[in-house]
Image (tube, rainbow, N blue to C red; front, side, top):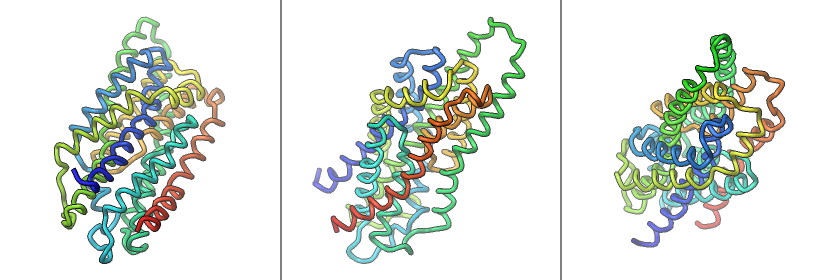
Length: 332
């Protein structure tokens, strides 16, 4: 394996691992906070489901990143997409690792997309970006957490009315449904999140080989396997920090709240994954948990914590774009 391959494999797989580590807490937060599973068992189940989802649930998100955001094949002579891939992964790692160490769910999707666009602008100028497509994707990334919050808020209010007169004997059924929703969420989460690193590896591979990126590319099996494994390893090992922030500090979670948050988040992430929209699944999980809490009693939700999360999310995209732009300018 030559130096160029190592240069892209290292940061990209580390990006996938850290993405999983950062998202892990938001994946297991509601299930653990409701008392259904222990943190370790929830993390094991989440890692297994995320691996299968990343491996099996399509490649639409990777195609969006690799084909629809920038003119990969229109760079000026002497500029290579490989540099943009390395810079995007490095910028996302640098910015989001700092957020993760502080215990806040910094968005690897925001950071990667910002880094991707910033790096290509450094190589080919603003005209290299397909702004209409990029605007649609970025608008979707920004609005889906709000949609998740509102949808979970409404769903929780309706669920509480529907279950108002049910006896406590139905609690085991809700716990079982909660685990089922959790597994489906982790499948969808892994598919959406891991495809971002897959896109980086494939585009970098074409660049290293000196080949243009085809209009529609396939994801090689080895790319799927190693990116899925790296993401799921991060899920398994990195859940504790974000779990403390999202799971126990926002509001007191019960099985019905957890089922509502997990189900709403799963539907939103899964539909977006098949549509090719590179969401920030960690954001969706957190916002749906907030919405479920608000649907139960909005006065008991820690909205100050939500404000901290929002500030982190808003800063991530532009700062990652600037950081990747500077990385490209320094190394070229």
